Image 1 (cartoon, rainbow, N blue to C red):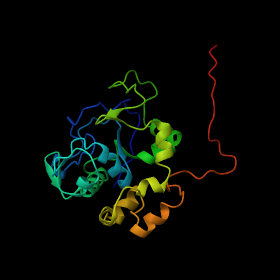
Image 2 (cartoon, rainbow, N blue to C red):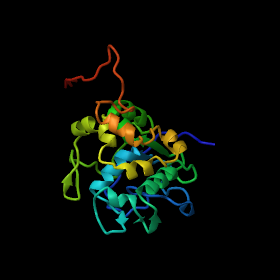
Image 3 (tube, rainbow, N blue to C red):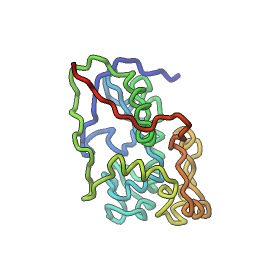
Image 4 (cartoon, rainbow, N blue to C red):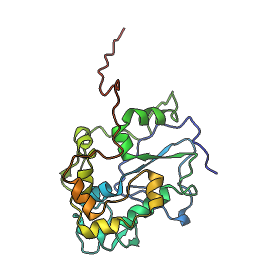
Length: 242
């Protein structure tokens, strides 16, 4: 069965390992490696991302992915054979599926010390996520295992990535999710396992006709919270020092 994480946990920020870590960005943990090798008082946060947006993000910079054509950016080569961490994949769609499948494997990432976090919830439901995760952290943490990254923006591949305000605008719209993919891309992504997508709360890739129709209208992605009368969307807090 699945057991819930047991607080308290140490405060920890993931180090920038540049790939020198068995569970670094886009990592696929094979069964042969067994459970993730962390101590019981460290909370491991596994971050997922919608596969279409993930592909578009990776297309800007391949990180440790090696495409067959030797390219380091672009969408087309992600839909061909590639290598990652010494293993071969049919394409980046298979890599995403393998990574997400490993995240959901209780034998690899025990739920007693690992939690799954959708990037979209961290972006659009930030306070809900932080409050939920804080329940697993000790209230008297003395120090961080790794210092938090101080820069609001990071850069990779020579390009600066989006800040929070830019990300909120970009990841809100289905048109941004579907654009830039051609017919063959969409057809391949429609082969994603529906059981895996449902487990993570993501919708299937659209068909060509649907993608074209969405491009003509402004439709919010399903993870954007719907506002109701009385919802507080912004607040300014003033701290008074005695």
